[in-house]
Length: 152
Length: 152
DNA sequence: GCCATTTAGTTGAGCGCTCAATCATTGTCG
DNA sequence: CGACAATGATTGAGCGCTCAACTAAATGGC
Image (cartoon, helix red, strand yellow):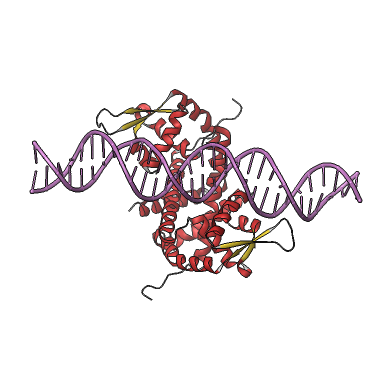
């Protein structure tokens, strides 16, 4: 036996399972609400949000992939769908002939504007309303720590 | 205007995005590791874990669905795959003729036993090692609160 | 006791994702 | 300069999931 597994103690076990249950339930709920009310999954909503915040409502495909924590492949497939829906369009990048720029269309912006209030309400109801201000702060620190730790 | 949207303030926005980034990165990483090392997604691993802990290494399909936070449909599809792999089998329930009982096979148990150390190591490395004991405790309380809030 | 309702589980279509392979362009360095 | 690696993005196969529809059996009034 080269390395002894450091098993989870009962407290860690409980924490891990609670986290799994909660984060899955939260994301499933929001995803379902968004699908029902706006006809798109949460991942697509996020893409539209990032584009809407970018200067000129446009981003290079790779920047968009990084911003949404998505693989390039995933973003390509998603962009194809979003383009077919008329919510974004893809243009050639003027400075890099390999590159593409995703641009949020007016239709896309309108769909996003229609979806946002309901979704934000959902995030508030299912996340922020359930936690104390102190817990929200703790969750932010924990998440930022984990994110930093994972990207290394 | 019937109801004014309660938008997220900058702090809430930051918390929400950090949570999204962290939980997605964490689950993606663990999923990829499990797929690479054990040839199964995390959801399937969880199914095998729950079965391994149940008396007689067996559970009713609906209990298993509840335990893994899965829809019945999802579990049915997963069970079909796991059965084809020889890791579980499904038997008729003796007390309810509509029911099915999922049973972990010896092969399934062996695969789980082989996968567990690596996966636990991953959970430790990517989650517990990054957080202080106090943060782990906070995360448990937050998760349990959210889970309770969501199931209502 | 019977019919409507509920519960258990499965199925198929369709969608989103991953992985690996691919193509084109750009960067690098001897 | 020119070869080779690195980067940007897409593609197709295959898998897992959702949703809605479905079958079958159990339950609950009246």
